[in-house]
Length: 479
Image (cartoon, rainbow, N blue to C red; front, side, top):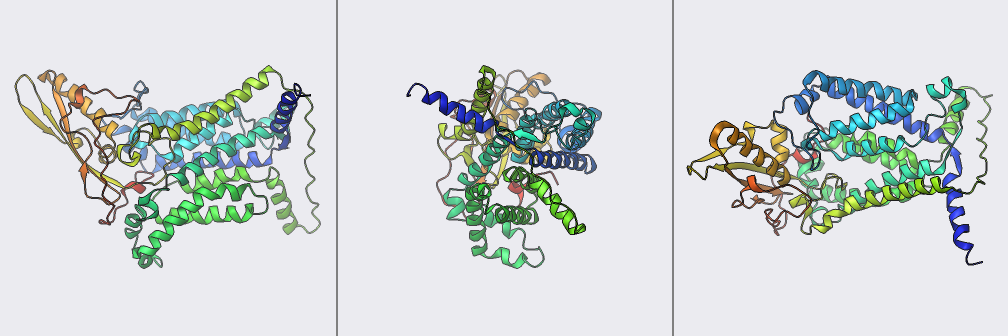
């Protein structure tokens, strides 16, 4: 009896993961995600953001290990975004689904890798969702592929398809909530106090936004929303009300802050928590409103799972578990560095710390030739666009990249090997500006990597104060 118990538990787990579920919900998710990608790509082309972010910069910040990713010339960068817009339509229509999802994942991820200063949490989420859709056959119904190939058609998908997507969205919300479990956010209502006071010109609600209690109410509401919303979305009884809260919450953030497509992406992502047949039921209700004699939609028959898993199935399950482990480990990695991640930024990216800090900085590079003793003061705007300089000035690894680039530039101009030091002063969540980088360290000799950077100075221990309003850290897109 005891020897068969593990096998029995394993079979029950496998039957749960393979249990058929109505495909309709994932079809709706597929259609919505494709539409968002198309709209976002068209916006980048129409508003000239492709040129601002990818073409005009003379220098591009790269991710560690991805410095081989090139920035394409202007016509090709425009072509990439045009292709993204078309592929988004293909995804919604379910046309050439496998090739479309692979190409979308590669192209969308490439765009994110071109320049670190363009990093946004929600676009990272889109890349992850596209990567998962490569393995989720959400084109087996209500798609051009299913119309062209009847043998492909299926009204069901295994439960693991939905569970994997739910896990990914859960990770985003939970870690975004935990990131707000700080004294700055909960005890000082920062940086929300700074951002809200910059929106006092809004009609109707503008005068309220100067009130401190409003900032505290918004801070605690954001913390409670992020940490609890998944639990409410999982509840069948509370799910409709919870989704209404999702819509209201993200609509409010869209009005208050210039965060681009983020609210739309999160409202779409939350659809994965609904019952798998909700689009059919919604369609039946709409038909019933238009035609009183409309028959209710018949439930999709769900065949029982009887086959025991083979070795390939266990390999696939192992890969899914490994993926989940990575998604948990990456946001937690910052604790290995110690200190305040909002200050030193080591482990900040990919950790879902959404709108968790307001930072402003100024940087001057001091270049010195050890052979002649001559010194130069170099401003970042000699090499960067305004948007790049804004991001670089508060992120130490980007300061390091530009310092090394400046050293190479001086060497190419015939000055030989030079030393590059940086005077970096940063304000975090309204605090007075403090020195971020050790001004005595020659950054031209430092190498980027995953190891802790001893040349980043400790975070200030003073409490935040309320300075003049700014919307800098709420940026989601360049305009």
